[in-house]
Amino acid sequence: MELNQLLESLRLDLLGSDGHPGSLALFAPELTLCVAIVAMLLVRVFDLSRWLDDILQRWLGIGFAFLFTLGGSLVALGLAAPWLHLNEGSGITDRVEIFTGMLVYDPLAIYLRAILLLFVALFAIFTKLSGIPDQEDGPDIYTLVLGATLGMCLMVSANHLLIIFLAVEMASVPSYALAGILKGRSISSEAALKYSIYGAGTAGVMLYGLSLLAGVLNSAHLPTMAVVLADKLDTFGSGEIMILVLAGLMVSVGLAFKLSAVPFHFWCPDVFEGAPAEINAFLSVASKAAALGLLVRVAFGIGHLPEALAAKIDKPAPHVAAAIAPGETPVALVSEDPHPSPQTKPPATVAAAKRPVNERLQPVCDFIARLVALLAVITCTFGNLAAYGQTNIKRLMAYSTIAHAGYMMMAVPAALAVASTSPQGVEYAIGGLLIYLGIYLFMNLGAFAIIAFLRNACGGSEEVDDYRGLIHSAPVYVLSMTVILFALVGLPPLAGFIGKFAIFAALIDSFGKTGEAYLLITVIIGGINTVVSLFYYLRVVRAMIIEPEPEERTPLAFGSSWFEGTYVVAVTIPTVVLFFSWSLLSEWATAAAQKL
Image (cartoon, rainbow, N blue to C red):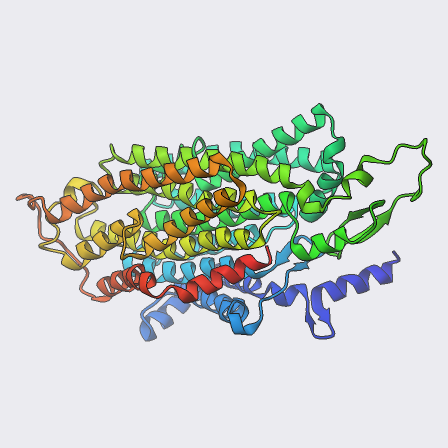
C-alpha cells in the first residue's frame, strides 16, 4: 500500500465517511476523560488551583478537582448515551472495530462503559460528602481515579492483545497509588506495597502468556486469532497444544488478579483494610466491572466469533480458508491448489473448514468454560468461608467482594458452554451477568458509603463490635445497611435476588441444553454459598440492631449537613426498586449481549 493510500485509510478510520462515524467519534467518552485529566494537570502546572478553588468555593462551595471529575464523568456518560443505543426501539448498535481493530465498539462496550462512568459520577459525590480527599489531595486522587477509569474503559473494549495488557496496567497502576493515599498511616503504605508487588508479578505472568498466544497463532488481533485457531486446531501437535494451554493459564493469572479470584486474592483483604472505604468502593465496583468485561472479551474473542463474522467465514467453499485483517471484514484466502490431485493430501484446514468456524472453536470454549467455572466455585466458597472470622468491617466486605466475583464469573461458563449452538443462551447468560453488575454497583457503593460516614461519626472506628446498638443513634444508616446486606445475600424482595437468579437460571438453562455436569455442580455450589453467606451478613445486622449499645461510646458526631443521609438513602433505594421494576435494566443488558 502506498503512503497516500495509507494516510487516506487512516483518515477514514479516524474521521469516518458517508454518515459512518469514525473512531474518534465513537471514542468520545474516553477522550472526555482525557480532557478532564489534562485540565486538572494543567491547573496544577500553572499554579491556578488556589485561585480556581477560591472562586468555586465562594460561589458553589466545591473545589475545581471535584467539578472537573463530576463534570467530565457526566459529559462522558452523556456522550456514551446508553439510552440511545440499547433501547429496543432505537435499533441495536452493530459491532464496529475502531482504531484499525485495536478496540471494538459494540453494545457490550456501551453498557459497561456506562456502568463505569455512572459509578465515577456517584463516587465523586460520595467522596465530596465523606471528606476524602481533602482540598489539598483532591486533584491527585481524582486524576488517579479518572486515569484508572480510562484504563477500565479500554479493558471492556479491548480487541487486541497489546490493548489488553496496556489497559490492565492503565487501570492497575493508579489503583496502587490510591490504595496508599492516606499519608502517614503505615497500614495504608503496607497495603499499597502489597498491591503493587502482587500486581507487578501477575502482570509479568500475564504478559508472558499473551506473548505465547501471539507467537503460536501469529497474530495479536482477537478475531484473527480465533480464525487461525479454528483452522489449525486439528493440526496442532501435543507440544503446541501444551503451549496454548500454558498461555491460557498465564493469561488467567492476570485476569484472576483483577477479579481478586482465588488463589490470586491475597492482596484484597489487606488492601481493603489499609485503604479508606472510598477507595474500597472504587476497587470493588469499577475494577470488578472492568475485569469481568475483559474476561468476557478474552473468552469470546479467542473462543467464539460474532455471528456476522462467522457467517462470512463459513460462506466459502471447503477449500477456502478465512482470516480477518485487523479493522477489516473477513477476506477469503484461497489455497494455491483448489483442486488437489488424489495423491496430494488436502490441508487439514480444508477438512476442518467443512464445519462452521464456531463449531470448530467449541473445544476452546469448553476449556475456558471449565477453567472459569473451577475458579468461580473456589472463589465464592473461599470468600464466604473466610468472611466468618473477620472482625473488621472492611475486611469482611473484602471477602464479600471476592465471593461476589465468584458468583458473577459463573455466567461466563454458562455462556461458553452453548456458544456454538444457542445464541439465545449466550444472551441469557451474559445478560444475567450485566444485570448483576448494574445492581452490584448500588449495593457495594451503598455499603462502603455507610462505612465511610459511620467511620467519620465514630471517630475512625471500623470494627464490627463498634457497630453495636447503632440503631438507636443512626437509624437511617442502620436500616439502609441492613437492606444492602440482605440484597448482597440475594434475598427477595431485594434486587440482589434478581442478579443471582439470572445467573443461576442461565447455568441451569445451559445444563439443560448441553448436559454438562460441571454446570449443574456450579449452580449447586453457588446456591449453597448463598445460604452460607447469610450468616456473616446477619452478624453485622445483629450487632447494629439487637446487641446493646456500649456504655463507653461517645455521642456520634455526624456532619451538620443532611446530604450524607440523603446520599445513603438514594443509593439504597435502587436495591429495592430494581426488584419490582427491572425491565429497563434487563432490556439494556439483553441488548448489550446481542452482538457478542
